[in-house]
Image (cartoon, rainbow, N blue to C red; front, side, top):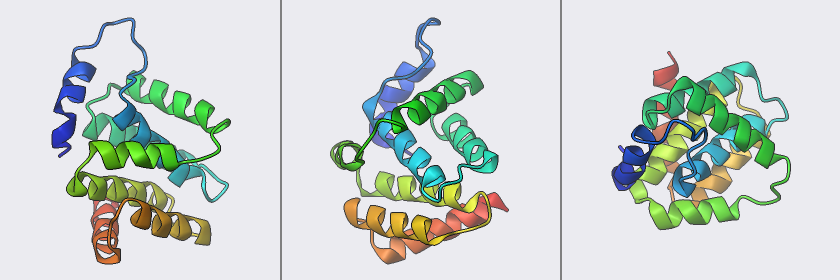
Length: 151
């Protein structure tokens, strides 16, 4: 799926035992956006965090502990983060169009995990589409794929 991230995947699977958090900025940027999607409505429920954890284990081959550690780090960093554009810039520089659509799909999955799309979440996704150069049609298709995966 994330063809440009093959070397990052190799780093993840061959990391040293004492490393508890993978520091690849591309994957960290994705995690930050997933956390933002879970918190934008003011209620980061357990189903959203569990969905993020499952995405990290499935898409990036994280172990359960690695996923937990990365989520904790992103949640802690989110307390002091005042902007998302630096994360968007990383994705624009490191990912092709298809990979950015995959990120939108993952974000939709997080938003849909609790069964409710509120106005803040819908607004976030409209902004992310524009910032990541994803069309409304591509986003709608990603949303549908994300919804089908949750069934």
